[in-house]
Image 1 (cartoon, helix red, strand yellow):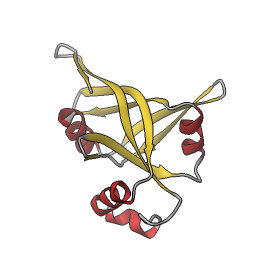
Image 2 (cartoon, rainbow, N blue to C red):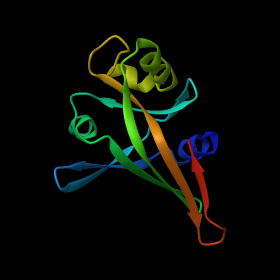
Image 3 (cartoon, rainbow, N blue to C red):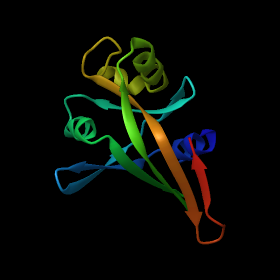
Amino acid sequence: MKEVYEFLKKCETYYLATVENDQPRVRPFGTVEIFEDKLYIQTGKSKEVSKQIQNNPKVELCAFFEGKWLRLTGKLVRDDRYEAKKHMLDNYPNLKAMYSAEDDNTEVLYFEDATANFSSFSEAPKTIKF
């Protein structure tokens, strides 16, 4: 999992895919943290992406950096604990203008049953499960 985290941090931007009814939805994300040995991302509960995840928690993200790409599939689980939100916001202080660990809009989610596939044109594929 640490390798996935480090890759996503280097990328700075990754693309998260959800499903809305029968329509895939993809958008850029940039938050990623490890908290209590789980890989977390962050969004706002008022956003459509949050509603899509709550209706169908299966997601996939894709990232590309220096000729290597990552596809990460799994289920996102909401963690409403103050400590989890605070950890994320402490590591992304620029988000504190929009979010607070105390508000009911800040949403942090962790990956469960995740499979990460690293690929490139010059190396053998690598799979990590966590």
